[in-house]
Length: 203
Image 1 (spheres, rainbow, N blue to C red):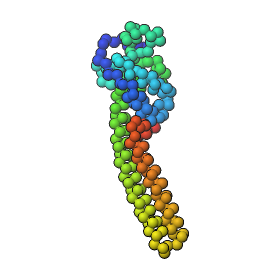
Image 2 (image 1 turned 90 degrees about the vertical axis):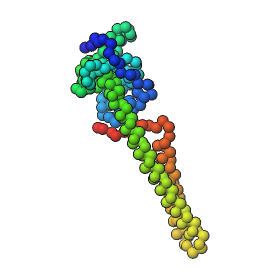
Image 3 (image 1 turned 180 degrees about the vertical axis):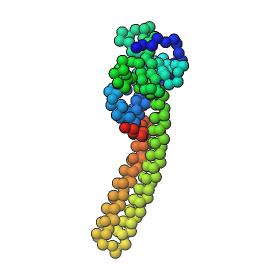
Image 4 (image 1 turned 60 degrees about the vertical axis):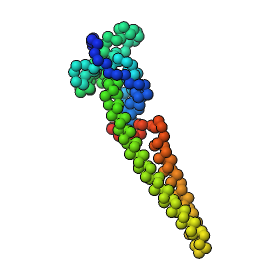
């Protein structure tokens, strides 16, 4: 059922890149729910990005979301909204009444919780960066010790060939581990990371 409504204070539209980020974070954080949504997340992004598509009401936790109009008649579409109640997890659209996770509820969810998901991801990324930086520095320290030990054994003239070979192999192994640890740190620091990797998954 449509809700006819007067002009209410609109919820600001979300820039497209930010809305897409919120979608990715939602999919990563709630994989089971995202699977049930079955592609409706894309349409929720469109709603979030459309100015005036989401509006507040005088009731706490209740929002109005612009209804899609198959005839693409803006003068009609702008006057018709579905009511989303985030406290009751309901929407008055036909899709939601059939038990589906509708695009209107998703859009409001992105508006309300997207910034929290983003903040969580950033906090986790910074924490992982710190741990990765510490790990790669420690790895290089161990590699340097192994390389120094190998050079000492190779030049002292008293160590057996097997001992020198083992020391050389250890130094090479430590070199590979240190390089991998540094690359992992660099990957965490690259611009435009996959933020969805840094959320806490809820099943």
